[in-house]
Amino acid sequence: MAKKIIIIGAGGVGRVVAYKCAAAKETFGEIVLASRTPAKCEAIAADIAERLGRGIRCAAVDADDEKSLTALLEKEQPDLVIHVALPYQDITIMESCLKTRTHYLDTANYEPRDTARFEYAKQWAYHERYEKAGISALLGSGFDPGVTNVYTAYLAKHIFDTIREIDIIDVNGGDHGKPFATNFNPEINIREVTAACRHYEEGRFVESAPLALHRRFACPEEVGEYDIYRLYHEELESLVKNFPGITRAQFWMSFSQNYLKHLEVLQNVGMTRIDPVIYNGAEIIPLQFLKAVLPEPSSLGPLTKGRTCIGVLAKGMKDGKEKSAFIYNICSHEEAYLETGSQAISFTTGVPAMLGAKMMLDGKWLKPGVYNMENHDPDPFMNEIGGVGLPWVLQDPASIRW
Image 1 (tube, rainbow, N blue to C red):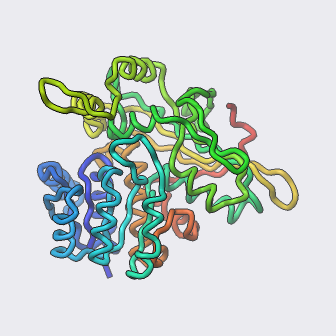
Image 2: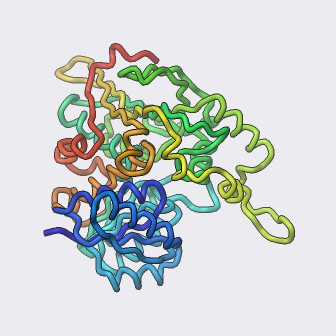
């Protein structure tokens, strides 16, 4: 029987999640799209009605206000909350779900507003309470984190006896034509990129300067060659915990020289600061002001051309021999926009959020407690993700140049 859901967040990812859930009528029955800006919800709802001929309802909610959010959940009584707003709000929403005994899903781990720090500890701490309440939380059900975690679990189950090393590679081969813009929330993007880098090496995380190490990576399928830079990403924390055989884990993301030049200037003049400053007698956060003047990521959909390439390059042992494998997806910005009205960055995050929710509501990934994607059987997810727009390829990486 189709279930009721509330989607919190009406940005580019929220648009994709709402569209994909509306298209999967057998799983998702009544859909409520909620945001502090109802006009965004209404625009998405109108677009879905035009594209799919299906209506969804809209609601106003401030996800920072636990009391009003809890009231909304008590009123609507959804089976699941899909949280695709800001990672600052993870804990507030998890608390409201706990109070109302509602299943929970997000796409990024909790971040405190005043520190550029990424960790699962505060969310993992809810495991026993969720378990006792008989509800389930699925953390990081985007692409990275998310699909990359499932890729790793699939490799561990089917391809390797033991995985020793993983390199998660995220290449955005797209071009939006803007002098400087971020392809997802500018505040979160810049916090992530400018934070200290951490990679896992021989049983511990090693810290280094952000973007200090880079390589040249040749993507498969003629996507092109790109400079990729090492930075910290949250899935490393859960993957090394859940696959203790891993001795080295790194995350790499592509950046153009144009992006890095603008970022360096913004850092040098203090525009990426997250501590408050006084301007004209009022307290402002420079990075939040910068977000307000940069292009809205959802506006980049019709402008962005090219393809993304995201995957996991793994090394380990199979039958006593060394083995390597590369598992990846390539996604077209243009095709993503034609289907959902969002570019591939939002698409590759929103589709796994919908599919993770489907895994939960169909009972395949539903057990009380708090879990990351790799804690569940990867097979049902891998069997379906290609059919909803993110086909995957598994290959011997001998031809990969980097």
